[in-house]
Image (cartoon, rainbow, N blue to C red; front, side, top):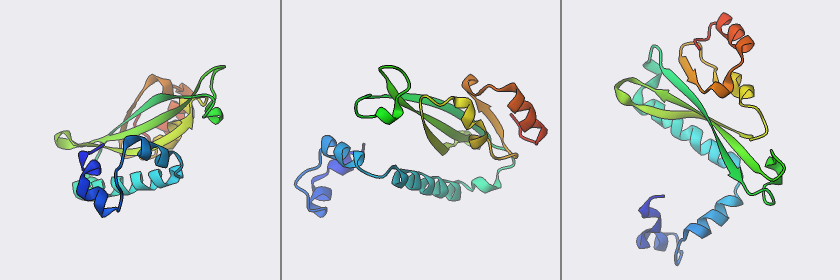
Length: 152
């Protein structure tokens, strides 16, 4: 989190006495997660405009899952083991020329769902080369997708 958020002038501009990390955490916990998805997509759109991403011939897209453990009593909806809860973040990164990269798509699922189910959600552009984690392995699906023209 940037220091500018805790700047005295910024807080006065918002008519707040102070902003603490715990206050932000409580406020963000009550927000609709769709807002974050819209914000993410808007930032990706701005990155594409600034980097002229639409002019690329073939970009490399890397797909990687990450599991985040959650407190089971507070996140019962994400239960995936007897005493554990969690979510998976499936992130697609675009790597461009000159070392430029940016996150392009993020999908959040419960940890109980298998990663394979997100492959067709994340692989959606036939003009790109995809690299992904072994958790997405499904050879029948790969055969079908390569027959359809995807470069896996």
